[in-house]
Amino acid sequence: MPVAAAEFVSAVKGIAWPAIPRPEDAAIMALVAQLDHSQRWPREKLATMQLAQADILLKFAAATVPHYEQSLRGRYDPHRPLSWERFWRLPLLTRKDIQSDLDALQSRKLPTDHGPVKIVRTSGSTGTPIAVLETGLMRALFSAMHLRSFVWQGMDFSAAAASIRVLHGEETRETAPGWIAGIVTGPSYTIDVRTTLEEQLQWLECHRPAYLMTLPSNLRACMRVLGGDGSRIDFIQQIHTYGEIVDDALREQCRATFGLAVADIYSANELGVMAVQAPGSDAYYTADESHIVEVLDDDDRPCRPGTVGRIVVTSLHNFASPLIRYANGDYAEVGEPLEDGRGLSVLKRVIGRTRNMAVRPDGERFWPAYGGPAITRIAPLQQVQLIQHTPESIELRAVVNEPITTEQEAKLTEFLQERLRYPYAIRFSWVDHIERGSGQKYEEFVCRVPDTFPGDAG
Image (cartoon, rainbow, N blue to C red; front, side, top):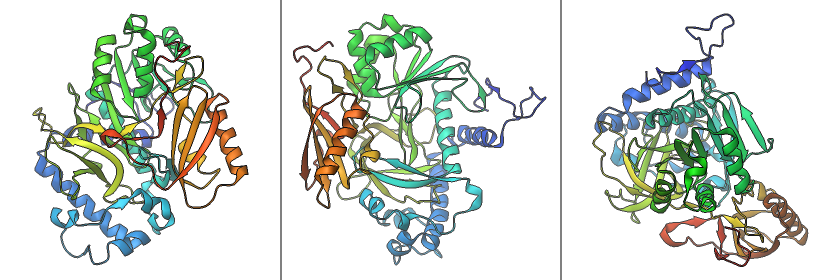
């Protein structure tokens, strides 16, 4: 058992040891035990198991999901064994497909033992808001993949962890008893990423956690404030990132500032954890037990190691809203095998997911957490990008399929000023499409204010 050194939380009154966990926690622990075993399978066995699970999902989707009843007709025969050649001929699913008709991607007959269903919304790396359904099973897999990542990084569960992230409808600061459900851990501390960088650093000094979890852009901004000297928070033993691209420059800067490597997770709200940074490496292992992660070139052929292509993902266990060969808008470079005994597929790097830091007139830079999905409930915006041209002004560029009213513009302005916590002058540009930038990146927020504008406090 990979978490054998952990102490488990018992859910049975009067029984402290051996602990009897809650059923949902026991399921996660059982999954992690299986993942510890399957990661050592040969690549061929992992691929065979992926294909078998994909066949089960396809049979279910073709019979119960309206979108796939149409799109798989004539392309998938449930009575024939599924081969990789047949799988690779299946049509791709786009964000536009999901956005245009959520109901068509919902199963009419969800298995009851997959757990409670809830809707998840995301703006994603392309800025195109979507919504899908997820099950309790999906959430368990998400937790199991995270726990595997913690095990891979050799984390001490008894230590304290701090998370600087977006808090939705929660207190600005919160303290929780632990940072892994079902396991006895050190304390967990959380602060909203929209607080000032100096507040974040003071908060870290107050709690002195061993582990820091935050967005890459926020980490970069904190290092900028520290001026390359990480001694102020030298109690940090590991830095974990999520939600954005981690490039070589950030990794090098982190090593130079703290003497630490970055441990990253590649995930998305609608898909869960797709890849986890490998132990002792900057490359990523794909989550082959829960996803089929393809990297395709412009002709939709698999990329070879060393080449970059678009990511296409099949979530193997989402029976509520099946996402089969879903082109999620991200790009990655295929990596060579790591030769550490694991048969999981390798991504050398993930690209195409970045959001810049915003800046206030006093020079304070911060994470612009304006809430991509929420903004589309004010006006019918199909795709959104914010561009900050000056310390006091922001342009909202959006693709729309119907005219936006003056009243909606006023509400959008009020919304952004409230979320960004400053009365920026907001101007609007309605466009037919929003191009990707260099490196195939879509930047949901682009800051064009120079780093050293007058009054920049660094």
